Image 1 (cartoon, rainbow, N blue to C red):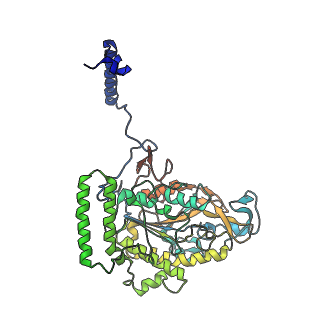
Image 2: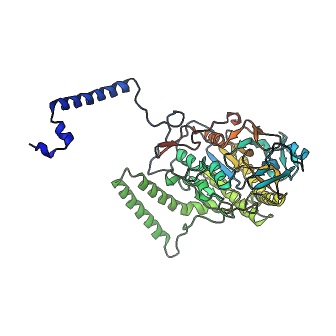
Length: 500
């Protein structure tokens, strides 16, 4: 028998019959109470998302992380194209017509701030381009974007968007990830995490950066954050394919194929030893996809089969060199969507260090020249891409999102030639699957300074995008650091008025 002196103080106390029986009785009472609470449904439930709803986490086979999965509810959209314009496109010079700007041109009416993001404000400035009614709907669009203006009957505009920040990196983060801070999953990552992809030969999520480089917030705009790495965007352009796809000339096709087959056997055997290791399965799946991309990516990037009429419509030739490169990116976007890629994010604008209207839409000075330069690059190819999707019957199953991080002020800066950042009102538009066409939702005030009617937050916008993809933004979550994280944080409502 164990010497009582070798036991701990608590152990020795359990040798006392009264203490032992008392402890056993309390333990039994605890078990009984738990049983009663469970019977009455009063025990704590599984972790719940904000609002108390039960999360819906996709059932993912870790060995096949890209396999197509069903949405929460059926919708027309099978894929999504995001056209993102970094730098903040001026809504009052493009899609948000404000006659009061012409009425008060050169004046400084009361109620507008004396100082904004970059310093003292100047006087009200009328649009730098004339607005005209377009399409059968008569939507007023400026001459800055005539090609997109021709398609307004297919668009659904949000005119009362507002954001929480007036800084570009944070604005890009907020629009694309739902948070101003870095480290959160992008919209595209959430969609591919939930739905996978229909094409197992190409990435589920492709980010096509501007020919001039990355946007201000860099890869965070299409990053996976705390979601598994399989759901980050794969970035390449029509001019710059993914690295290391070409087989070295010193290796024959037969040797290459035998090597791939050997690796597949070794990986399968290794996975059998560790069947519950999701990270291992994900890495193997990523390497296998990389192998498949050696043949699938060169094929999808080969534009030689496109007709001269298509190349002309997109504006591959006849404009600036940058327009030609961006036009090829637009063609690549269409080809990826045709192949069943779930999410394509196309960027028009770049420069992590700034840009000031030269490499993006951030026109703090000389807006008449800098916005015109960006529009020459973006307008025709983007309009051609949307028209091409429609002509091919793909728009019915593709959600198109045109977005920027915030707007620009109705008055000039003190320099007299540029517009400052405006987080209080800006415009984005949708087109395609599940969306009303020829429709405008919300209004900014008479100057385009603040959202005035049906104010819409970025949370609302993202909630609506997820809904259009068949996903409940409140229930699509990922458990991270003790929280059920979601794209819309604890906010957001679906804008049902825009649903077709």
